Image (cartoon, rainbow, N blue to C red; front, side, top):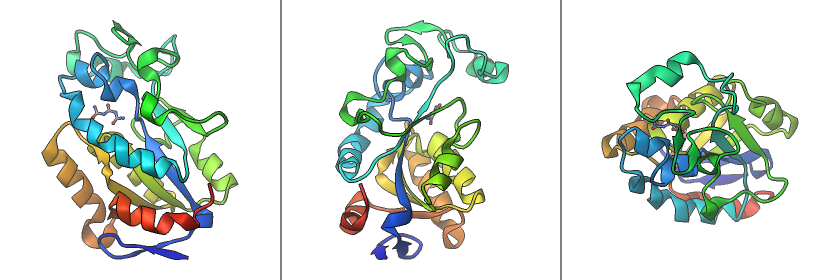
Length: 218
Ligand code: TIU
């Protein structure tokens, strides 16, 4: 057992039961011409998360990707219609069809590219547990604690942490490894998780997680 200095109080970290979960660090969210940009966002705001996430990745790894089947059979019509976007999910853009599996924009960004054999969970929703094998994969490996990085703080990261909390996982969200297109949502997205005695989980810095990580199995 190791301790991660975290808010609202120190996290009792059990490396044998912990997994690093990196949410949707995809070109479609972090590079110009993808879904994040189609929504009207400055995608460069998310890039400060890359270097600290890379440092954590050298210790332990598992990724998610938001995206849909090429035939869009798993895309709810409500999700497609949302925002009335001129270029939306499934439409062609500079990085291929937006948020479609197999397209360049759907790839994890090159800086964090998964290693061969590394678990990658393809998810059609914002939460990583909805319509995926993630819960079974974690349970089969005896994982009860998640160290969570990725984008965006208030959308896919928050949704996943809430889903994980309801399924009995303890989550530590790494503040400098999660990012939002909106600074106020970054702040509030983290405050919501750790408020009320850690109602959904803990928040820690990558430095404090790194200090505890040497004990974690790769
Ligand atoms: N739009 C936005 O902030 N996020 C998403 O659509 N997906 C994820 O957060 N991955």
